[in-house]
Figure 1 (cartoon, rainbow, N blue to C red):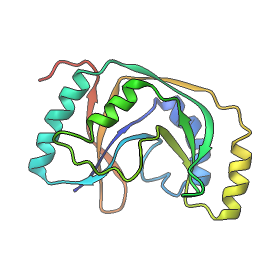
Figure 2: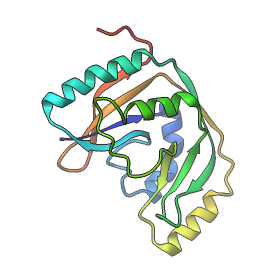
Figure 3: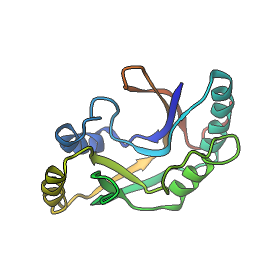
Length: 172
């Protein structure tokens, strides 16, 4: 099965981001706005049980932290993806790094860049117009992050939460 590990911002932050995503992101209906900690990977039921135990330990060792978004950026010229830049904080990098080592497969395609995608799969002309418009917006979002989620992908492409991991919760 196809899995990933993400942070979902709060509903008010998601609503603001979705105002743009519903127009510019073809994946809008497949997954809510999120920050990817570990990109999609394939594993079986036995291995996912082992990884869930590890994720519980990681969550228990993590303290809640603030997520701050204050800029629109892009991955161009590599892709015509437009995203909200998440301010880099050490707990975020620590989480992403822990999920690439030990029992986890190191499946990084790119370096970890904390972001929330707003638009993707745009033609060059559409990308230029949308990025020009969005980059002039004053976006200031702050959110308290206290959990991450293991998600899995259905055959129709939709991502669902398999399990949520709350920071600082006692390991059971």
